[in-house]
Length: 129
Image (cartoon, rainbow, N blue to C red; front, side, top):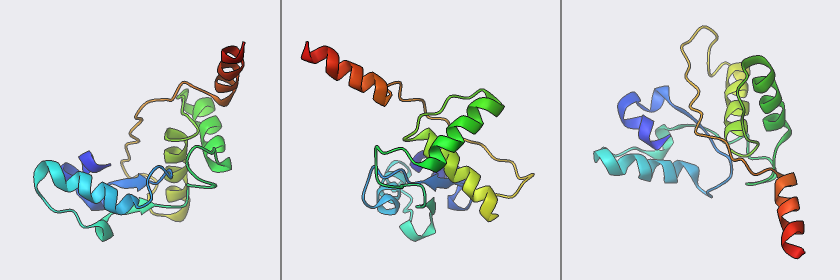
């Protein structure tokens, strides 16, 4: 989000908090203010805080639903922690009217975390042997 603020402006960028930092507005403001030297005030950011759920690393029902919907309708793979929450935030923004149908919208897919909870458990079991 921080890298998009300088060229696009805070009114055009919507961030979705996934729970990785305690103060996302301040963190993004500091990241965005560094490269360009332009000060970005935390209160000017469009930031959704409603997708954190039980906290970082714990998938949410909304992220799981967004993950399934996006895979089935668009063929895009999302992970349940970052991109799944980001898509859930975008869907919620459309439902809330913050993003208007017909408005040009870009979803920045930053990559997928390939390790699932099943893979982690299998890895733990393998290391115990």
